Amino acid sequence: MSNSAPQQPQQPQQPYVAPQTPQAPPYLPAPPTNVLAIIAFVSVFVLPSIVPVILGHISMSQIKRTGEGGRGLALAALIIGYIELAFAVLMIIFLMLWVVGAITLFGVAASSLDTAV
Image: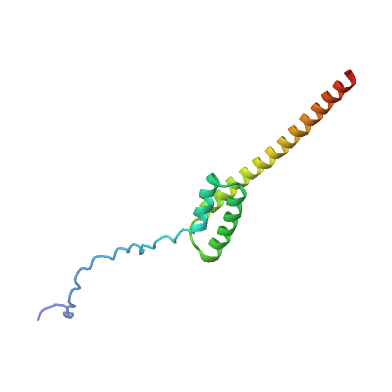
């Protein structure tokens, strides 16, 4: 009589499987850049300051509506365009004041010549 424990049926061993490494997400290409945003940015350096402001606003609305890229270009065109526009307005005001001052000064000088004769 042997004191051996009853044998349990052996289960086949599972083969070793390496843990799955996470896969990298698929590459998603960047959305196309809005052409009007590019034109607005280039026009900051070429055209009068009102043009990039108008084009920048139009391109920002298109970008918001379509989801295209180029928001940074449109925003830069707006910022630089508004700075140029403010500078142009200040220059016009300065020029008008200078002209009015010159006319006044010339008028005073001319009237003093008339009384001297």
